[in-house]
Image 1 (cartoon, protein in one colour):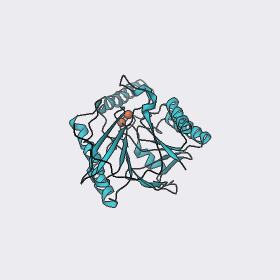
Image 2 (cartoon, helix red, strand yellow; image 1 turned 60 degrees about the vertical axis):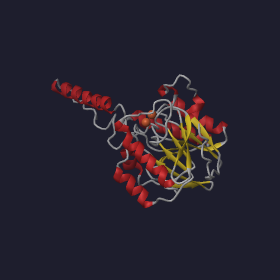
Image 3 (cartoon, protein in one colour; image 1 turned 90 degrees about the vertical axis):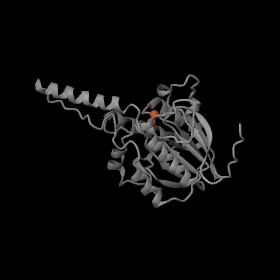
Image 4 (cartoon, helix red, strand yellow; image 1 turned 180 degrees about the vertical axis):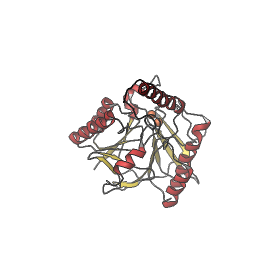
Length: 285
Ligand SMILES: [Fe+2]
Ligand SMILES: [Fe+2]
């Protein structure tokens, strides 16, 4: 048992994934939990290799790696491949030491209750769809000249399941609306207001609103998220007199954009047990 290293987006970056596992060992953590954009791309051979490498590193370190889905994870394939392979805590066993927390999943570690809600809107959706279309066109042209090579294109760069739907969220909250200590998400709640990469875009608001609804329903003491690739801490109201501390985590170095980035900003050592104490209202000013 012991602490958990909560990590920001990895984007399939093997070198960074290995650094995260080593950081967990250094910080006396017995688990890693990645808050989305993990790099779940098993529709490609390189994606399968990535899972294998992370699994091996996690096994050698004795630190299993858990993750929820970001907008850049093919979660439909995770369900297709691993829905029937659940561990005792209900995680999907992708590998012995690599496990997926599906949307709405709840569990308890060291007396601390957790819930995970993956998904987000890709702001580069148009670019990704255009790349997929270009691959399709290239293959059609090649076939006209006799090539038998046809590559999969749809669902390789942009995943239609990337954000929660309203119905999906309503069903999850209807199934269990009881409070938890910690919420793990990929997207930020609408009310948090980081100074960088806030994704203040109308197409991003619906999913941010859904995460806000999760906060106001489950009223966690702390919410960890990724997606913005930026480290910040902020208190937001979670209904009644309660407050939730939001911890946004930075990403792997290749996807980092903020000039003050350092690798330590991409993880947070969560000491367990961490049960929700009343968080004081922030002072005005
Ligand atoms: Fe993301
Ligand atoms: Fe990301």
